[in-house]
Structure formats: structure tokens, C-alpha cells
Length: 228
Image 1 (tube, rainbow, N blue to C red):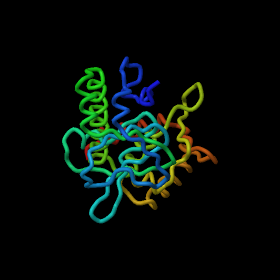
Image 2: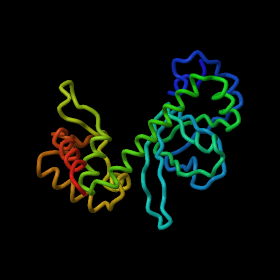
Image 3: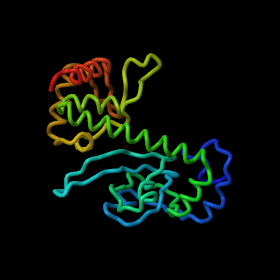
Image 4: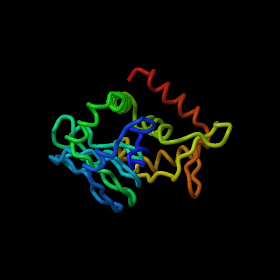
């Protein structure tokens, strides 16, 4: 079975991936290792086979904004492969792992010879664009507090069968949340304290529990409707 068969872009498709794998490289990486950096001229596409990575952008002053975290089965680097322009983000390993590194020319051969793969990539890129549009809207319209509510909802998954509560596992570090919504760590700490006092969140050893996610959703919706 092809090693790339479990990558979301190819999963369930009847493709012979062996010729493309044979023309690719395999890269093992360690925590904190930089896989792709800003303004690099490289155009390889990375298919994450194991491990987790973080995608971020950095301002001229050194401030970092986290765009995403990726898990096994996901792909990054496709933009540079398609347009040949310098890398627009940094990708750094969070854990030990391995990736298939496919040269741009091979990736385009695979993409243009398989319509189903091309359609999946277009849908993936459209989904990422919609997510960025939503975050841009939040950044423009919402204050820090409501951006935090929205981000906590986005990071969480339903807890238990009833699904009334939501949970983030493991609990996020305050400086990481701050880098995701564009503020300072101290501001996040202050907001978390208030949320805890209100009984809206609870931090356990292994998770952050959103006790009343519907309240957070309602507050975000109300802030979106308000005239800023």
C-alpha cells in the first residue's frame, strides 16, 4: 500500500501513487525544527505522514501570528508549488514526525493528471480561504474578548454524548492563544480569569472545558450584530 494513501488529498481514490512516491523524498523531523521558512524560494509540497506542525507568520518587528496547526494526513506548501512565489509562512515542527516532500513538478503532474485530486485540492484551498475570511472579519469587527470566545469555540470539540459542553485537549498555553488572535499573553490571562469566575470555563489537568459554549456563541453573535 502506498505511504501517501492515507493523506486526505488521496484517501479513498483509486490511484497508483507509487511512481510519484518514487520521485519524492522522505524527511524525518524533530520538535522545533523548521520545515519551511518565510521568503524561501523552495517550491516542494509537504505531505504530513506523522507528527504535528504549526504554521505562522511573523511581522517585521518579530511578532508572531499563528495561522494553523496541522496533523498527519494534511498538506502544506502547495501555494509555492503552484505559483513559484517565495514562501509566505513559516512551518515549524511541534513534535517528532515524518513528511513526504514532493517536488513541485511532480506534484503538478499528479494534480493535472487526476481530476479528482485537483477537485479535492480546490476544495481544500477554498476551505482555507473561507477560514481566513472569517478570521479577518473577526479581527476587523470583534474586540479582543469576543475574538477569544470565537477562537475557543473553534479549537474545541464536543465533550461527552450530550454535547452540551466542549473541550480543548490539551489545554492551550496563554501565549499560544494570544498569538492566534493577535494580542498579548497578559490579556488572555485576564480574560481566562474572568471566564473562570463566571463559570464559563474550567481548567483541568489535561483539558480546558467550555462549560457553557452556547453562552459564548450567543455573545459572539451579538457582538457581530452590534454597530462597531
